[in-house]
Image 1: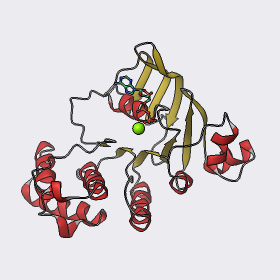
Image 2: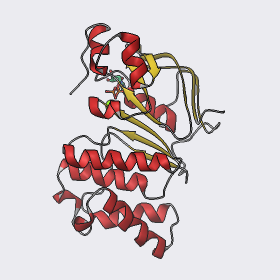
Image 3: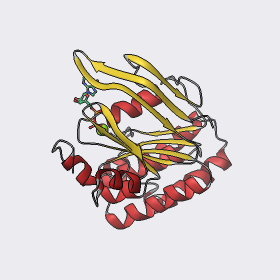
Length: 242
Ligand code: ADP
Ligand code: MG
């Protein structure tokens, strides 16, 4: 089966600093693939390379066999950046409507979808509030709602649950699993251990390399540890950010 996301010996340098060193990776349709690694290990850079926001210094990145261009809107792709890209002076609904119009959604479909995604992130009652009144966690949830709006097949989510309380985080992860059941693919960066455990497979990033790409269970048994966090502690003494 052809992988949905394919990285072939991808390197990325910023000036003389090499963030990623010949990283090869395949992600398949319908998986929840987690990218896990210490702060500064290159998780965001990897996501940006996948969606075409960064170009590799060497190697090749394809999504569905295609090299993505950052400036294009792809109906099948959803992206949530690590820092929220929201219009603070606009309401949640206006932010969502703006994105929906970019995707060419009709008005009836638009309103239906907006309601649906706002229920998913538990923000429906705040629909008409200006975003500058939102807390950090609420902004994260709105960004997630925007990424889900056009029902993409592939979701790239960079730290989607930062600042979100554990109860809601669990609901959101249940939502991710539901999306997976629908056959969608999710690529999610996280530094939260219980989230890592809920991924089908994990890519562990350290010192510019993927040191493991496997199921959480297989990785733990490979390193002889009981928690994923211990893999990093065992492997060079770098702790995962928190
Ligand atoms: P993570 O998301 O895992 O915390 P990043 O991908 O954001 O890591 O960053 C990896 C490394 O690359 C960091 O050392 C960061 O400072 C550096 N970096 C990221 N983007 C740039 C950039 N545009 N210019 C220079 N250095 C960058
Ligand atoms: Mg990051």
